[in-house]
Amino acid sequence: MSKITDPIADYLTRVRNAIMAKHRVVDIPASNIKKEITKILKEKGYILNYKFEDDVNYQGNIKIALKYHPETKIPAIKTMKRVSRPGLRQYCDATSIPRVLNGLGIAVISTSNGVITDKEARDLNVGGEVLCYIS
Image 1 (cartoon, one colour):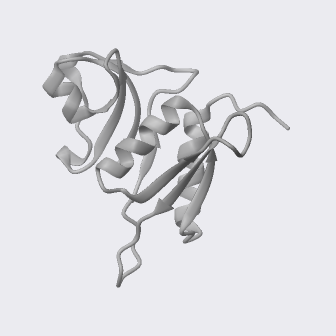
Image 2 (tube, helix red, strand yellow):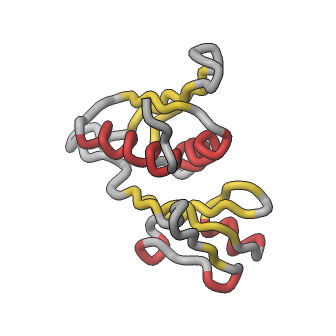
Image 3 (cartoon, rainbow, N blue to C red):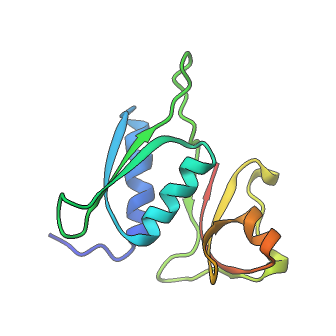
């Protein structure tokens, strides 16, 4: 078993792969930051639901129910892109927070106020590490 060097990239890849394979549910090993990203995805309507399972193993699991359009079966999540990575961290201050698809997508940012979206960061006037773009 190899050690994952970038757990957030692993999270995004698992969700991306599940969407491409048209899965309804995806299982992901849990961490606090992944739980926060999952809450944001639910809040913004990109996923149907989620469940944190702490009894599976010591680390815990996140079960995510993916969202598709009822008739066309098009997934709610079109793109998920990792921005800041262990080899090259991407930080932004409150004045240079990126806009994803001119406000149609979201940027997930890790700030001193926790993991929040780009819009919330602008409202709170805080910057931080840009984790990923979702649209």
